[in-house]
Image (cartoon, rainbow, N blue to C red; front, side, top):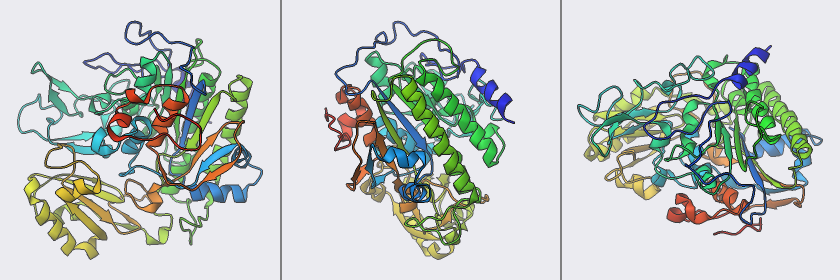
Length: 510
């Protein structure tokens, strides 16, 4: 039924987004050569223990979901992999846990305070609005959702970004220019480190804007593949068919080809994202009545999504083995973020406009799902806004509010100095979604349902081990570099925040 869709996406030409700096390829076809821009690709690895690292994110999955699935299906692929896996059963996603900062954490090892990425749709006080030609007052929405696509109804996103929808800035020469996703990132990525050391990299995700993992150079990916998920039908079969695009791309790169199955190339870092689980959680048929994070009860759709992942994962392991790469690969399985609420009886939708009105002050922008970030017209109004919000906390399902310096003290950027840091951070009561849509779950907050994620590292030479030490998804970035023998000192997240390599793997932390 979905074969034409799959063929179209895999056969598409490289997406040619305009940019003011050299742009890495982010489409599905064989990329143009980049001679002279990086060290020539080499098959000689820098004393690394592994020749390639593959990271697969099954968005929305909790560690408790994985435990439950293995209990339900003890002969599954997941259950089989556990025999040779090191399992970090107390892994935590980024805060905020929205997909954009969650992805940033994985591949930079940096927190939002350093990376400047707080959500996929935020406000920047130092940028000009889209289509403004850098005139008028500063302050702009920066939206890296489907809104940045030239054509969000096309799998290719229209082969371009919508320049009338992206924020602008004056460059060092006083020329007004649009901001592209990779320009917005303040730190480098593991893909850039790998490319700078002569290795090839590939990554697949859900929107063209996820080319931001190219990093500030714009060249971190040898090849990216970002079919627009918003272009497919809003039902589970269509979402799983979209996932199949990524599984097909993964099959091709595992076999030593580009995403579209042509050419010959060895990739050292491969990352891919899958959406079936998170869609099932968010759109009904996810968790059954009575579910809790500690004891999830799968509904029909979530069971279907998990079974599909399990089957595809089994095929992928066979493909790695057939390619002679199984023992030389460190396979990392996890999720960018969890999903909330697992107990859907607590679900309450709150209109974001009511929250904005409740501040009693001028608001520039609010973003949120199961938490909220607010940027004020005047940062000095933060304490007043907090007082007013707390006065209506019961009606708005607000648990607590951070304002001004409290935002920095909690671990975010300081809104007094950082033009991207929010002035107000709202912690909602469990089950709250600041939205007017029909979704039953979402993510972005730092509640347990959002933060608890699986983290499984597999290699056939491993002996099963459960590690209860709390670890962060930021540590995946440094672990990938260390596994390949690449210098951590070249990663901004490691230098500035000291993000350590995951323990108990025998990998160096330098």
